[in-house]
Length: 295
Ligand SMILES: NC(=O)c1ccc[n+]([C@@H]2O[C@H](COP(=O)([O-])OP(=O)(O)OC[C@H]3O[C@@H](n4cnc5c(N)ncnc54)[C@H](OP(=O)(O)O)[C@@H]3O)[C@@H](O)[C@H]2O)c1
Image (cartoon, rainbow, N blue to C red; front, side, top):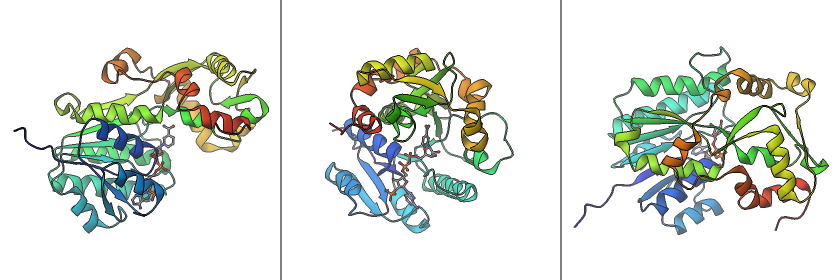
């Protein structure tokens, strides 16, 4: 009889990336564990009902994190976006250290696509590269993924769609690489399935690449009415350091680097194009942002 697989622990499983990873790992037949802060929250109950073993508590609770990591094959680590930079680094390092101590077989950390080869000197932009650098010093087989910009970011209410236009960070002729949150999980399931190939690797992941003009065409086609595309006005970018940083990165920094979509498709054959995502998984969010009632 085949030996039973040891579980994979998913952090942030009630959130976007962790939820996507949980879904993909369950589909691939992995026993899954999740660390959840509120075990009776609907998202936690849904995980439990899907067969995920819940450990209830925060990643600040070292004792609990140790217990959740015990005897795991894999650990997926992602940290929430709203942390102060120092906390993000502290938690990221602590989780990686505990993972190394637990003897986990394969650790996967979700970092960010705007991480480059050098630090920027700005604490919040440097949190992820600092966690990456620490991880590389540990005696652990780790994969670092850097997801490109989420497709979901383009259909947030209040970013222009309600007025028939879509605003983003690129010029109409410039291209942006996007990933559907659902694809994050599929890529990571592929990585856990092949540690020999992905262990020790740092990889940007993306699902599609489109110019501003292509976004305009895709939005108009799926919405069934004209949607114009424009870059955020300069004064908006000047007033928002995070948006300005991303815009610069898309111009000639790490976000401008082309991810080979054929290589991506080979890892994740079910990759979602922006058009297909917008017409299916993204449809409700699109309707909401357009001001229509979600279907
Ligand atoms: N590439 C992009 O376009 C893009 C876009 C957005 C974010 N990001 C990056 O993605 C990362 C965030 O991932 P996400 O969007 O999947 O996050 P998310 O949807 O906000 O989910 C955060 C998860 O972390 C959990 N959590 C928060 N504090 C915790 C704690 N103290 N202990 C245990 N669990 C805790 C939350 O649990 P609860 O359910 O209890 O809150 C939730 O499951 C950040 O690194 C951010 O920079 C990238």
